[in-house]
Image (cartoon, rainbow, N blue to C red; front, side, top):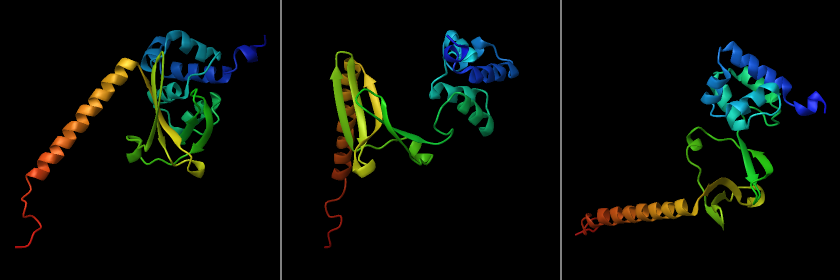
Length: 187
């Protein structure tokens, strides 16, 4: 087996190791900071594998890299999508990406994703709730979030939603009862 096939990310690994050493961090410190096990970090540094995009973003943030350095590391990891571009992923029923579309997202919208449709799938392992928006190509519903949980947790989420909505309805009814009946009527 060639070194290229057993270590396909060797350029990325060398850059990551140099970055870590430049910042005087041990492998244990970096793995703890980005919450990956030490063996995975060692595999990254020798080029056996690469971190997920999320872990790579944590590494970039941990070292407080400037955009040009971050983009170089991103490219060395072999990710096709441009660094810093918001990406929207549409998943099939197995969670595999089908198509991608770049979407501009304002900073305000990052905190809350709005949805107008939901699909729920239950199997022996738990529940998967897929939240959708009718904003895709040809107005096809696009998955904006997929959340998996145990059946037990799903039941507790249902209970919390039910109680919260009931409380909201009660407050709304009480506030309407306190309005004078003659409000808006001319005498």
